[in-house]
Length: 108
Image (cartoon, rainbow, N blue to C red; front, side):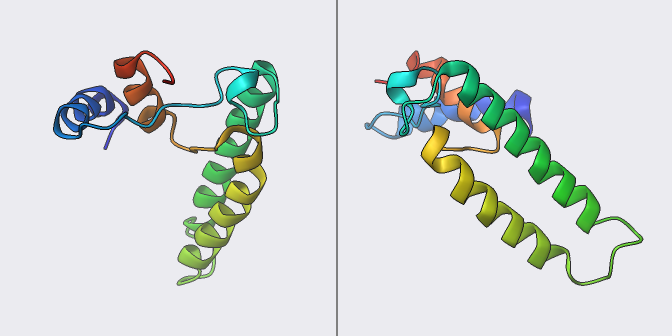
């Protein structure tokens, strides 16, 4: 799913489900599990997402050993989630998190 499809897809999910949509909970310190500030949460999301992209690009490069990309990507994603969930309830996919948050007006 591309970024431009996230908002329409989220609107369909919000119509289908009667429950609240998932929202990006790192927009303010009171929504951070560890009580981190908005700037700290933003920096954590950006840095951890960039680290994940670097892992993907490095593991799928033609010079990387063949067949090990899923292992590297899976372990990298696990590590990034272990680091990021206590800070921001990490998403690593801004389009998937921001689309529902725009539709429901943030966290409820």
